Length: 478
Image (tube, rainbow, N blue to C red):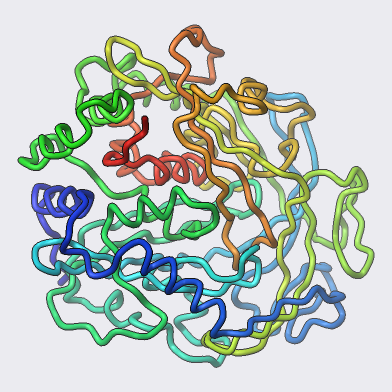
């Protein structure tokens, strides 16, 4: 049976890995240089092609759905959606149906008392810069069942072992406007044994991983998702070390209080759960399967792309890939192309002496539980969401924010295995005179409450998890 480490042991070990240390196996400069070397070593090639040039993929005769010849991996089909709220009450859209639960996993190990995480320099066909740091294992069920007839993903056996030592293990959702009820297992395991190190993998500390996440397009979405799941408990003896590390950094201190001060939250946990239950009970998005070949509502297939005639939302395209160091060296596949730049944005402010973040309850057609908590603004789907005509509330705050309000700003990539050159800006703004009165589908939560909801599965959406991953408790913000 797997062994589950105690919460106190896990929290202390993660906090030690947060702190700057001379005991890290690799410096930040060395990690970045190593990534640049991997770019030079592997001549990757990704080319857009026509749909009829794809190998092993085809449009199904009866339905017109875009499917693999094995009927595995995923299929592109369509939904007919109806809802009882918002500006558009019904619409049609393509969607990826990939019901398999994949593994997103970090192997972690202590070296001289400092926990490190094993990351991979992974090529994905949709990455704008080809290679980004990914989890130790990032694999769909079809991948590790070797449906592609390629190699087994490196280090997979550690996650399939019945004897693994589990530090984090959660099911988390993917984009609910692009995937139909898609989830992945986000897992971190502790390894005591010696590990044979592959040349395409490198050890980094948690603090280094957070620093790398602040850089544009360095840490991929799957790694950021796992990173957001890391718990922090207030009873660690190491907490004071972090609190005193940057005594003059006001925002850093606010973040720490927001994580660990639970008695001054603007809403209780029970109030938030009741608020979400109310919305899930009274609002709905009702989906029905629609054969992709029958989709209308402005969607067109020109042989190279399935796109909307307004040139908004997203499109479906095809690529041919050459990647010598992947489990399969050549393949073709469909990808989603988000057609407009997008923003994931959080507004935060102090309430009752505790920093709070403005979250929104968001209903999406592909969400497994209909609704999850989203950032203040999430336009990851493009200029507008598929069911909204206008930009969401508070969007204007992120267009030209005042420099003194910006606490984080970075460009991040969506999953490169399904999305083509899809980058978006992650922004956190602190606006202390921001109006406390907000629409009924918004609430102010402390960071500690958000991290607690992370443990409940399918409560925090992927856009919100991206912003959680970008927050660094040990960063000097001023």
